[in-house]
Length: 239
Image (cartoon, rainbow, N blue to C red; front, side, top):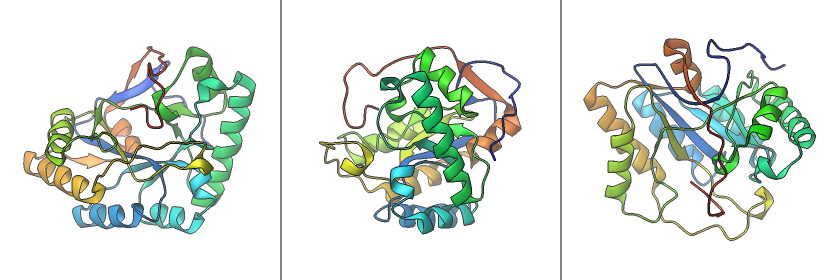
């Protein structure tokens, strides 16, 4: 069900694009506490985004996932749950990702092309597993800091400074719990819909377009990196 089409650049993890637009992406959802309000903000701005979803969340609320897809957003895989792929054998990682992507395709009605590893943790062995599963790994080059204990103004500044044409912007539409393989999630207060609304407003004022990862790559091809890193200090978010 999933495409194994190779992109022009043959190797490495996608970290940005050569597009004139910003690729907006959300991790950790779908979540009824956040996703519906974010969908409303995106609709108001006329923007499509890429949602890297957890199957541990999708299985709890498949209708919400379908709502995201039916609104015209791109569905991609964040993992069966939020555990690090680097902790698995290559065989187990390949099989788990392949099964999760097939299940996600069946629920969403979309071809699943992209995978974002939880915590951004990706080794060379894990990279091979991702590619063997038929997926392409995608990280990010800009962030909203919606996971970090900083002020709203600092989040806006961080997002706007990093969200340049060609960047892939990281945001989140889910809160993690033990069902996602996470314990001790930090309590960070963040009005994510308000944050995205203001970020999108600023990008519109600058004349910078916003869209999905797939659309950005189709417009300007992928920018890849050969760096494979584990997060230095493990944490529930690890961003």
